[in-house]
Length: 313
Image 1 (cartoon, rainbow, N blue to C red):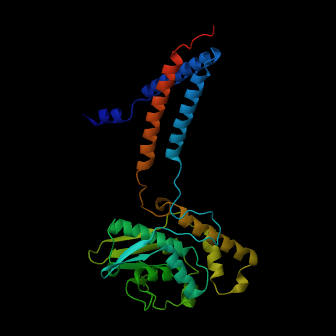
Image 2: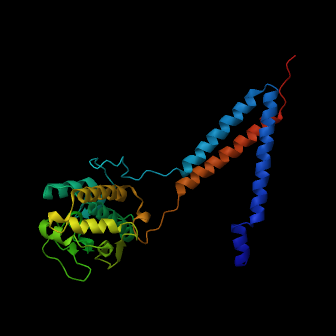
């Protein structure tokens, strides 16, 4: 069979689609007329049965396409604790679990400060890279190598903690700026200064499986981070308090909170380049069940509406 015929089989011509749609509309109109006639005869049972069945079927179909709440979904209040699926690693013979909250708690205990959204970005990037390279396999922690160009305290401390190299520095994580210069001083004060003049180029972390050399770079999508964000960030991290007005500082904090929530709640394919949207198996199955139920409900209504109710003496 040639490609044209295959395409025709997968996508019927427009006139066929319109014909089928018109036929369905006529069938629905006939059912409505039968229902009206039944009501005029005093047979309310027909209308009630069809109405309830149709409503149930529509509810099932709507459920199929209702967006699922991500694992870290929350109301969006800045102080609310949230959690994302934990990362699992082998360390020797034992499995180590690292949760998003573990990373948050570590950062806050080390710095006594609230994290910037870079922590959520790094954690989500690690999740995606782990899935891309190891799939459903639990990786060995020592098999992970991370090269990051993002000199943000929130990102650096998060990735060092995840890779198990938080104390001492360890070689599972390396900070290498976009120009290729490695950063050895990972103190908070130095990272805070370096984090000011960052660009979207810094939001591209490379993860490598040492045993095979397999590597993937997880990069934020264009348009996710705005020019306003980078402008305010540069001002806040400049080390010159007089350069930023109270209004600008408040705006920067609000942006940080909203972006943190965004990186927690948003599917990975809307955050990172090259991440494919998974096939919606759940929605398709529920929609199929809904269609079968709707077909059966319409058939039952048609059969019930076609029967004449006995006339009152």
